[in-house]
Image (tube, rainbow, N blue to C red; front, side):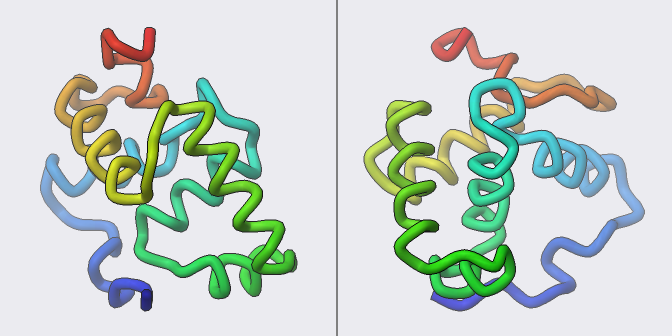
Length: 109
């Protein structure tokens, strides 16, 4: 899987773009380790394990371990479910909220 083009996550001018950018920046902070949250954010941006490994200076196998931990901690079976969880958390989090959007989901509280 290749990453989305840089403009897909470029800071926007509207409130929605700011909300997405903030939510993405904080996603997973309340439930995952710092490195797991970083890997989750990179997955949400469309990066493959190989690209994530290169960016973080790890092996692809290490990134696979992080993926497995993320899935376990968040009760997910796939990266598609991670994306759906992000969308649900994004919808639940109030605008201008600087917290992890996951804290606003009642099922994960």
